[in-house]
Length: 159
Image (cartoon, rainbow, N blue to C red; front, side):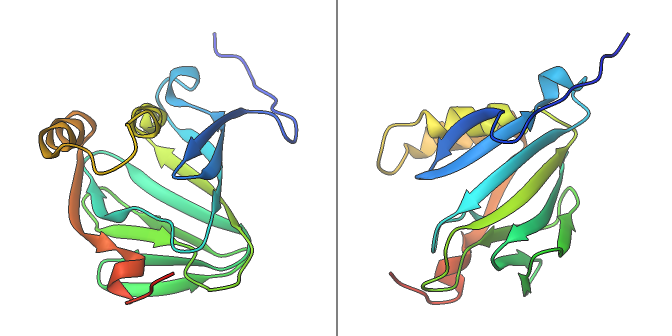
């Protein structure tokens, strides 16, 4: 029988991804692979390239700051209380694109669960550009396809 779960403020499983903290409150292994629930912090200009997920919905709810989200060709600025979701196969990316803005904090829910495995493997890669063959295998394994540049590149922003 399934059991409930309580995670107190400040608890969870932290992970450093590109210098920003992500905190897993629930992951696929503990949810019957139904979902992952994480709180993420986003520094200025940090974010993934435009990508799709083969199997997962990628959902965001902004807690603090303004999170820029690209879904398809459109870019949206999400403020606290705003919500966005990208279903499987829909190109999307996101990040903190406002110079001088403090960290953006958002809830990120992935359904089905198991995306924590992707992020753990990614954060364990050595610094620098990963080998192209390693990235290809990694993308195949996790159902990810990179289809464009990070949002900062699309918007022509530099540090």
